[in-house]
Image 1 (tube, rainbow, N blue to C red):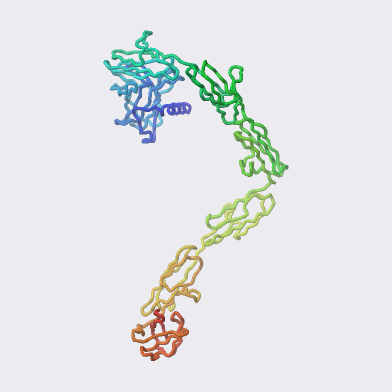
Image 2 (cartoon, helix red, strand yellow):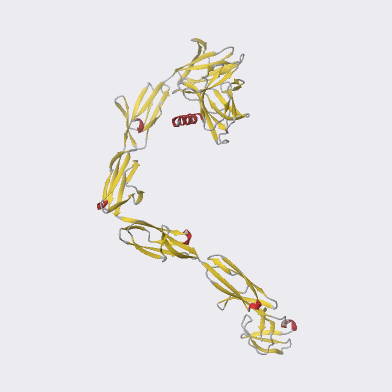
Length: 566
């Protein structure tokens, strides 16, 4: 079945370039089936390469293919691929590219679609049988490469058949024949069809054949061979395949040229040979360290040969890898490759040791150092470092905890695979109100590193929000305060009491500032409040002459609220 599939694939590839009359969409359906068949018309198996068979389902083309001659089978056959779904019913039609018409024939065949099924075989093909009132005009060409013919095909009685011959290069048309009798010497020949006809188009050569071959065949390719008119120039070029080099051209026993491209006037048939030779490549092997082991497989190779290298470790050593130009090319002691160049490889050995591997869980939790190869009996130290926002938990091996310290040391006597476990650090944001009756606070709680925390201060009646404090310092004067969590925090929302005291400025008083002192005066300059000590933000009032309440003054155009408590 595999050979048949490859054979069908090759045949399909050959037919893709031909322009079919019906063109199905092979991507419309996921499934296909194949039919290996011949075509009969009125009981006669057809050998007309102009015939195209089309498969249809509900009027839609689901596959089409040309009737083609296959020398290995010595038969004109069709390898048809159908596209559809299980149970679809197919009927079939014929189109003749020679006469450019679709035939109104009756077809005895109907196929039900079964995915991946193959109907017919190379030795017992399926038969598509058509019937209709038609005559066949077939044309043979002598010699076969003399030229091409158009107009052959099937015709209805009374149709006009127009045959036309086109000589190939180096040929000329001679005549049309039937049953050994000359019908016409004109290159175009027409007649009314009243019966079947088997006509021959006769050509003859007009020049010489230049042939050439490669020795050995796989050494290269040659361009320029073919049929040439007498006196024309032929240019032959020998093209080396990879791994071969050109030597010379010979004709018989005579060396003609050592140039891969030669030109000459064509005066006779000629047969030349392009000689190539296989390039030899050298594979050189080294050992590091020299006492580490032995290697095999070095030497001379032809292009495409397979080099099989082997490395054997000496006692107390083990093989690490093959390397070339400092790059690792294989970790297997037995390394094979197709030779296409000179190569210099080194087998690297080391004293017997074990592999210590370490991984991180979760991957973003941190990093570890210290993993690698260790000589038997030496000490390995692994260090786990947590990334910001994570904390180290423990080391485990095969699910068992082996250490709770980030630095873990042990004697290496076997291979190890350890896991460093980390956990997300949770930070607590504590919020409170000062005084507690001054208002409410929301937004605190537990957060992971990097999350955004939003806290909000809501003043109570007769209280006003003043600021957010942390460790005695101000962190925000906005009642809604957001920040990225990077540590534990203890935030205090400070509120201040007020009872609606009238704005002093609206009462007609004037305020000015001297050396952090606020002085209130009336419009005529009379000092109302002799002196009031206050910081630049209106806090820490130190004046015993004011009654409790809230005072609003304006310094250099900026309103400052002064709170006095008793």
